[in-house]
Structures are given as structure tokens and as C-alpha cells.
Length: 110
Image (cartoon, rainbow, N blue to C red; front, side, top):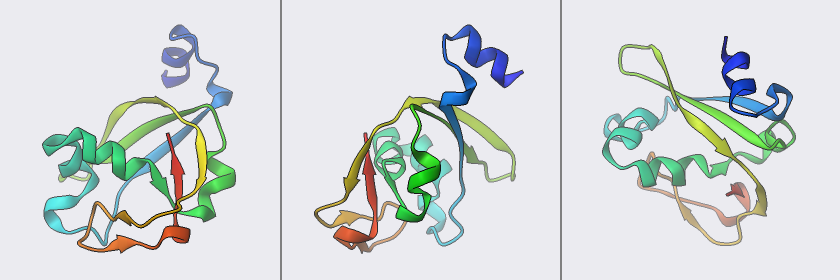
């Protein structure tokens, strides 16, 4: 059914990666779900930085993003066109904590 939705939107499912955002180490008020609901820009900032271990998996044209809700359900957030920018060159806030991510510890995407 989701693949049909993608095709009707003019997107080949082969070009899409499904991303399920769930961050157990996140502070209670900064889970991906809370970021999405309270400040969508922060959610997009959160989503735009990824662990380099996932680089090969995330090399695709589109991301279909989902977040876990407080009730442990999964909610579709949106379909994003994604492009790898490279390793982050400057410290970036870790949106789910009070820390700053090391510059070379994360990959940046638009």
C-alpha cells in the first residue's frame, strides 16, 4: 500500500529508504516525536544529522520518515528528498540532549 502511494506520487519505491526515528537516549521532552510536534524545524535539524555507520544505507534519493509516538505506535512524518553533504565540519547541537556532537562524528544531509 505504501509503495502504491509512492508510485502515485511519481516516486519509485526503489529510491526510498524508510527511516524510523526512535531515540532511547533522548530526554523525555526531546524525543523525535516531541521535536516534531513542538518545533518541526528542530525535528528536521535532528533528521539532517545521521550516524556515519548508516551512510551506505541512506544513500538514496528519498527518505520516508516515521516517528514512534508516546503510545509506541509509528506515525508517518513525510517524504523527504535527501542529499548527502558529507561529514559535519563543525559541532552541531544534539537535538535530543544538551550535548554538542563532535564535528567528525556525524554526517550531514539536506
